[in-house]
Image 1 (cartoon, rainbow over the protein chains, first blue to last red):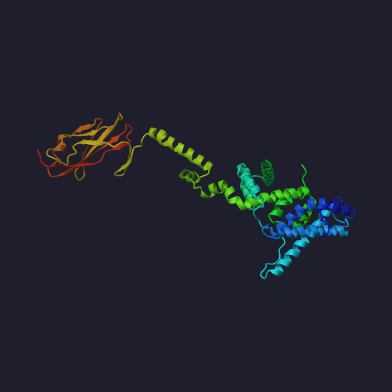
Image 2 (cartoon, helix red, strand yellow; image 1 turned 120 degrees about the vertical axis):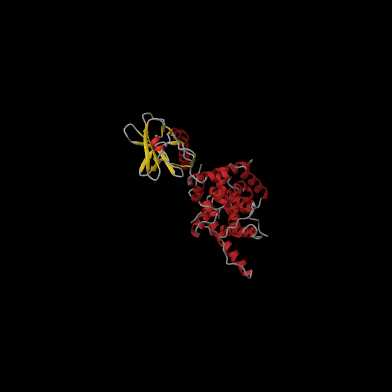
Length: 180
Length: 218
């Protein structure tokens, strides 16, 4: 059995072949969350094999890096993004072949689902409830009702810029509360 | 604070509002921009909570607007704009001033009435005696309520079928001459009327005509 991609000697051996300035470990650590986010938005967190898809993508990225397929023409981020997108489409096509009445593959679906960490969701819920009405109103109209910035601005008799400011400020307040 | 030029696309991306090309461009971008990726994840978390728990989180926003019913006062108040209410209030105040302040001080104008072809304005003359329809005796004098004006000349007219007699006085009564009494017979209908004239000779007041019968001749 070969060395794990996370083995330090294996990583150091491959640094020279890797045209990036990052070690493989660093690449995995940095891009795994990004790949996970992309896969979950496409397949949904409720899909049981989304983690397998992510793992396959990471392995694929490392293999390509080892083979020297990354020539540095683009950024490492773009390289990994391209691999990720292709693997997602491959997975969906494979799934649609298996399922008899599967819908047309739509890798760009972004369903809204409960976030994985329920505790974090509860904290965020309570934080939103404690916001001042003017911030809750913009969140309600912009995200819950999905009105445009202009429509929200008209409804609240404020400028669209002020709508954006309130959303950003609400996000900051929530981030502070969550960090506590 | 660092701001990425793609940051404005975060909400549209998460709410699936971007075109396919724009979406792919943004996705490739956050693979290369840790700042945008971090913000995208945070915003996605917020949107997920809002979408799944919004009905309870925003209950205080939803309930008052959907369930609140206007009070009677609010319904009436909404009938007119504030400016229209102000105009109505001023108009009502002016009306009250006119009704209770101005009108009582205006002297009542005397009625117009027509006596034959004469149009007369001013107070009417009230006949006092004789006003009983059946007279047992021929009246010796005719009396009426005089006007408050001075220098008024009263002219009395006594009718049978035609004008039987007329007299003039500045008093509010006149004695019926004997020679006229002799002309009056029982069973006949008579009527009398008084007119008032100003010193200049203008008719200023007229009484109604009162009828009477002589039932017994002296």
